[in-house]
Amino acid sequence: METKKRKTKTSTAVKSRYNDRVYEKIAVRIPKETAQAFKEKCTAEGIAQAQVIKEAIKRFLDTDERNT
Figure 1 (cartoon, helix red, strand yellow):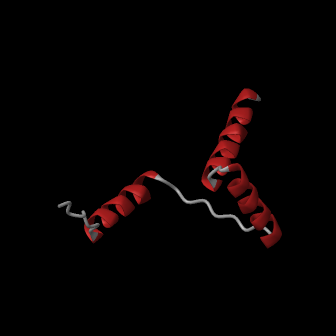
Figure 2 (cartoon, rainbow, N blue to C red; figure 1 turned 60 degrees about the horizontal axis):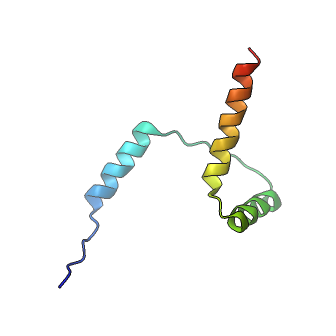
C-alpha cells in the first residue's frame, strides 16, 4: 500500500524564504482589458505569463547592452 507524502508548512516556509532571498517581485498596473487580453492569449498559446514578461525584460536588457 502506498503512503501519500504530506506537505508540511516547514517546506513551504523554506521555499518562501529562498524565493524572498533570490527573486525580486515587480508589479505593474495595466488596464483590465489589456490584462484580460494578455491572459487569454497566454492561455491560447500555452505560454506562462511570467515567461512572456521575463523574455520581454531580457530582450529589453539585451537591446540596451548592444546600444552602448
